[in-house]
Amino acid sequence: MTDVVDSDELLRRMRRARDRAMREERAWRARGEELRRTDPDAAREAAVRTTAYEVVLRVLDEVLTPGRHPDADGT
Image (tube, rainbow, N blue to C red; front, side, top):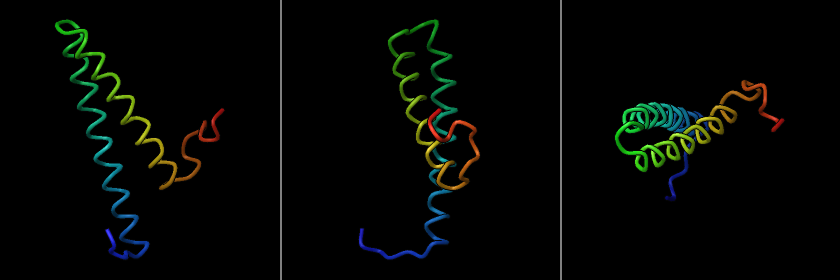
């Protein structure tokens, strides 16, 4: 990937990534809830994926809107 992009394009890409992470987090959360009763192992996997997308979403939120989360400093 050797394309040079300007800051506006970089922000657009990061916003798209945040939107995607938000959709994926919701989808995995819903899937985990559905699987909880029938397949505990798959529900645990969905919970791990949900957590991973939550972390990605939080990082992208902090980059795009610094200080939005009260615990952004790690406390």
